[in-house]
Length: 374
Image (cartoon, rainbow, N blue to C red):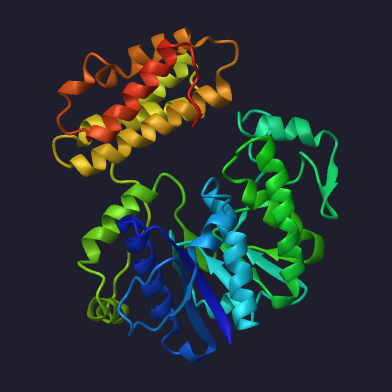
């Protein structure tokens, strides 16, 4: 038996939508070979009607607190959830994030897993170690390299995305070694993706890592908000009847950015060239223009664009601020994002209160001569 496992906790509807859609995509492919793969949900509560074709492994409150260091780092939970599934099933397990869907049969994942091979989603990067405000302290700490739990790591160590982690039971001890790597580096700086770094380093030491992005689509980028909108429009409820109906249907949702006006793209490109914007800032400005363009016809989509603009602004300041002071950044932002300024944002009735508050917090931080963290 092979196990596809999902980790679900907290009960937020957007994550339940993601999980429901990912389950549907898996079952569509497994209908002919369902006996080869079991699906398990590792969760802190019962979430579906009991006759869905999935197992449940419950996480106790004590386990949750211990595995997340008293809820200070949720991504740490993934390693322990995977260990729990390995111990329970004593079989190969592929832990798959909820913001995924299968574009090929899940059986193919396990054709790549063996005592000699493990699977993650795709090769990614070394996390902008020299420029990212969270990773810079870790890069300095690593220096020319070190060994943690018998695993050599350095600032040149790259990583795979952990939207998929597929392992054999013989890899258990390697996964355990990822925990002290994660804990030691996270204590230096709370980079949210240090878990990916730790898992990759540990598995790379004892296995050959293979990618799985030709089997599983992981929409962890800024397309996620638009993907959630499409899923919500396609899934009316979380009932067993709806689940089986959609498994049998031709439901297909592709993560993509919605249509954008050619005029906005052109203006963004011209301004970017004349003002020498970096890629993060250029995308922030395009997202801002897209938000304004969508505001009258699709406020939900406009709010997603507004959130993307904010996140990209923060990334730009974190990665590319150079010698500029917060007051200089503030002046540029007020020029380029006029409708989101403190004096204008309250008049935007389409903008959610929470999103307004996040933009106002940005202005306040810069006024106080503080750089916001992404």
